[in-house]
Length: 588
Ligand SMILES: Cc1ncc(C[n+]2csc(CCOP(=O)(O)OP(=O)(O)O)c2C)c(N)n1
Ligand SMILES: [Mg+2]
Image (cartoon, rainbow, N blue to C red):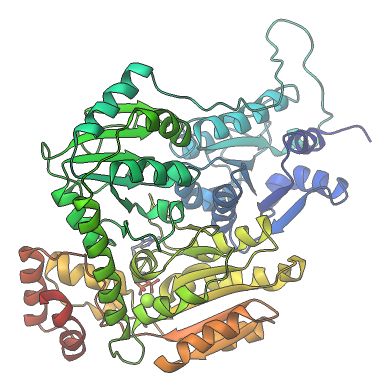
């Protein structure tokens, strides 16, 4: 049999170094699946329960491996299911290539079954590149460009392959007019800013007496350089959510997370600083940054489009974070006066004590903060952490003490529910020798995590280290939103939209061939983590936590406090519990 377009597509993916595809079948991609079968195991096809999960996994693969993630779905419904996962990749700037089927070229435009205008559907999410392959000769340059652009722009791209074309004999483009002749290979570059701009940045930073740094995902590979610069500048460093793994939390001048999920020392540092150095972050909430005019600003980012969009910066340095910081460093003068740094260190030390006290406060039955607090000292050295959107993201951001050598991520930009478990699966496939922990709410687990437990059941024996722990924060509530309704809108909890059913998740895990542990007493939390992390198979920890412990912002404004009081006065069904757990936190 001659080589088909499907065969060629896979050959090309392999040449690009791609070996794993997350997907789900359908007759719109049978020509590609048949070709995958013929490769005889060269590719690892990971079958998911839902195409959105394939897209999350491709995004997780990119996040944890730094390589392009690939997902594959059939035409129509399969392609539509990918969307949310692809938006997650888009908003968190991850290179993902989606390959989707389409009706046969002979049927396109004929309202054929499962025919959806996929170019229009993907136009926004894959705005960097979405193309339909219309002839065998075009397969080569379209897949080449989709991969190269995904990597260059750190964005999702999409290749739409009509099903009849997948089975056709592959033909190389002739050497003729109207043909395209592409090759493989990335351009690796570490751009650096102009010298003059570097000097201007150094002048601003040298003039400051109270320098605050904010680092994000763009600083994940610049740990040493960030620390070096912070040391000379006597700066404290706050971390945006996606930058959690950029710096260990045991350094005394790292103020931790920032924003609604942030810490008090981060907040105070930003309110008091006279200079702001932002590295690789697109942190959105300007109310947590200095007031306009309060601080002189310097920003470093690889993407010229996003500099100076959160705070009016005086100097914008467009370049690779590590390379730029290395060039900046010799231009900086060491701050002799260390008062600012010492004040930050004192606030950080006090804050950790506050967090411990909060975590150990009684709750019914278990204080969710304690679940994260007790995990920190038990984190294996090379663990990979994933988290979902929900109240768990607060405790992940604030309470969990990350150390050097770990990786961690969640859906930062889209803040979608659902990626916690699929990211963890992708982390296991990318690093089968490392333990992985996913921290997800019961709502997110019900939304899709439970289904993907079956995927874990199918594949876990392939992983050299079988440890994958899914911690389900079982509060029987869509708790983050319940609290947003109370604090932001002054509304009482609306049971109809917020209450969710309880379910025996540990038993469910056992039925799926995994381990399940149910925890409903605070004193068992530490031991449960230890058991799960010593297990010979993936484990679901079902931890019963108190929905009345408030995931409040680090400072509560007068307006928020008033709205919260109003929500209680309007007859919140959880009234007594809420008052017990939270008034102390709010007004203390
Ligand atoms: C797909 C999606 N739907 C809805 C939301 C809004 N939302 C954010 S957090 C949240 C509650 C999550 O509940 P759960 O997973 O139980 O976590 P909890 O906050 O209770 O810890 C909701 C509904 C979202 N972010 N993403
Ligand atoms: Mg919940």
